[in-house]
Image (cartoon, rainbow, N blue to C red; front, side, top):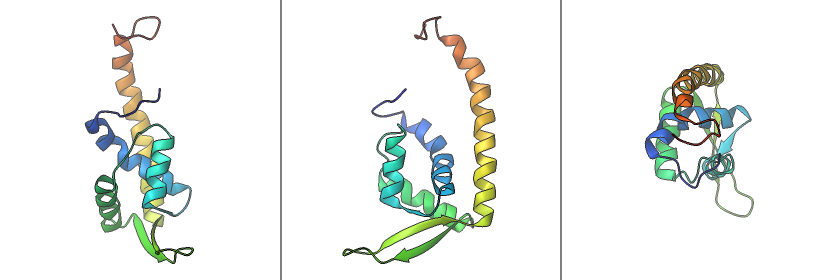
Length: 118
């Protein structure tokens, strides 16, 4: 299901896991990360939400930062997972999968047989 905008408290809960997952594919910069989040259906994530998260990941030793020159434009700040960050990303993905399995067991009971809300 793709929506224009999810409740902000849901997004805050899953954003770290999703950003880590994106960075498992390789180094990226802020705008590209927000574009990827939008492409997968999480809606528009503002820089004021993303960059503090990336800063916390850097501070925790999960992400390292590298400035790269731009192609005819300003440089970009790229974020890459460290070895510790890769392990953390895998753990977070496994924990999130278990959490969603648990919550789905409860919330699926709120759907009628056609998948609509009761």
